[in-house]
Image (cartoon, rainbow, N blue to C red; front, side, top):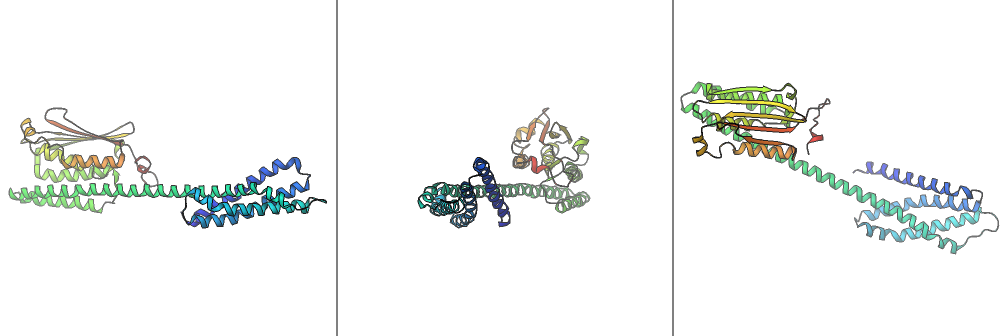
Length: 364
């Protein structure tokens, strides 16, 4: 917190606190308003206390720089409070004697006797000062901790997202290499061109974690076009997207590893190929996305028991947990023996009218 932000807080508490205290003294003194000695004593008591609080402020500010504990801070300020309490008491007794009328005289014993109340008032002021300081320090530390956690989570999300890109690129280059070895140079050139378009769009896109579902589906179509070159008629794609889900926000590249897994472990190993069905729907306050694909025969499953998962599913779970905590669901199932299904459910978020994301309100 800067000095400019501290100053209004001090003046608000200083002036407001003394104003309330002064009003309270005035209200309780109304029945004795005709006694000049009492009025002079009370008026001087409040005025000297108010002026003395500025000296106490300077002392407290100096003590605070040493960063002692609350009790140690009050111990440091107790002697000055005692001295100031006596001076304010002496000033009040002097005003009572000066303006109280004939027969009134200054008494050191009376001044000393009322020192305790004044000293306690200044000590209470010190307690309020250090209490506010400790509260603001704790609040600042909590804010810094929250910012550090946010930066760490952001770095982890970026690392997880960037982990997908070389994984996807490696698989794509592998496929291009296979096409060349198979003598399908024309298909290899076509695949390279489509891969370049996809990578260009990925690089030029804003570096944000959340994008509209429409944008994510465009990238998925580009990826499917690349795989279509390799698989041809062996891969069939069906889509069913709910209109109200088109502008919903989803993590960038969240579907690509799921679709990649569906092709690599589902469609590609099948001699006859198969179908991928991608759908989206809105269920209450959740966005549900489903990727259903044909799956190899039981003999392939027996030889590759870990095939459906891989880096894609594990990476996706980690990203979703970082973004949404426990407010997400990623389930895999086999509706039929030769089908594999991934169902993703995340909080339904939209971009605000001002251009900012509402995700900050919902996401941890």
